[in-house]
Length: 342
Image 1 (tube, rainbow, N blue to C red):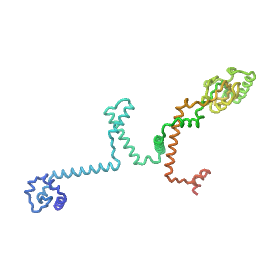
Image 2: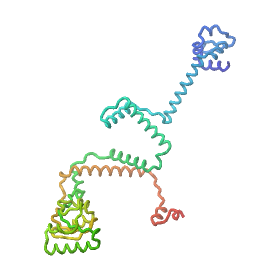
Image 3: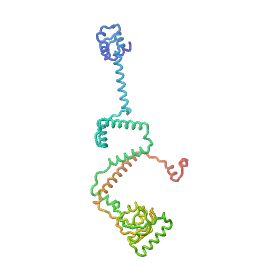
Image 4: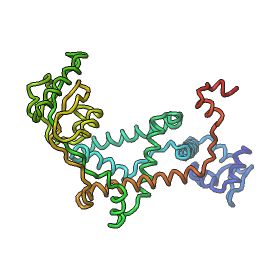
């Protein structure tokens, strides 16, 4: 009883709770040989005993405990990052993504499914972070680095260039926009896989025959071997086109050959070739107006890269970077890490 009297003395509202439970008339008629005064009101031991045994009071106190526990758990969940809240904006975003994907609005069940997928994704993402699964993962590191790089490029990219800036960029990089050299040529093919070492001799004999009589470009059609992937005449081919068919080495040699007359043999991935250059059109630098779209694209990309590099350098300046130079020099000389440590 002493504890109940202490409770009543410490909490004036306790009197109101008692009266709500047992009624004011019962309190007024109770035994008040031992009393507690609360807020100017009197509670007897008789009433206190009734209160202790009253189920309604037990129910009320249990409700208060449950309410307090629930509030504490909610606060703990928020504090510990265990609360996931999808706002109206989040739901609207999910609905928009669904509509873009399926070209129609989602049904109520489909939207609920999209929301549950988003909750699942967030839970698994947080748990993965909590378990440290993002640590020492090359794919994750590169993806985060890439996202930061793109973000820095977008945020730090400059405004539209002026005409003078675009012209200056074009002058500094004009060779990049030069049109490729274009060739028209004929070729006679000799299959090394079929003839082996004899293929080179056959090609030289055919070349001597063609040059001795000053043969035209059409004179070699009856010579050499046939291959389904190759043709005799190649009109208007850029160096890149030639390289795609015959290989880079062949293209580099052919572009240096003089116009007119049979030349060779020139080796490709297929074998040996005699080549007749019919025409060569040199690559010309176009005007800015004709390639302005490409120049603007390259200019903007260059500025984004400059901004990203500047951003990185400013970040790097904040770090104290320590590299084991002894180990680096030892490895550069071909020594093992164990030897470097000694």
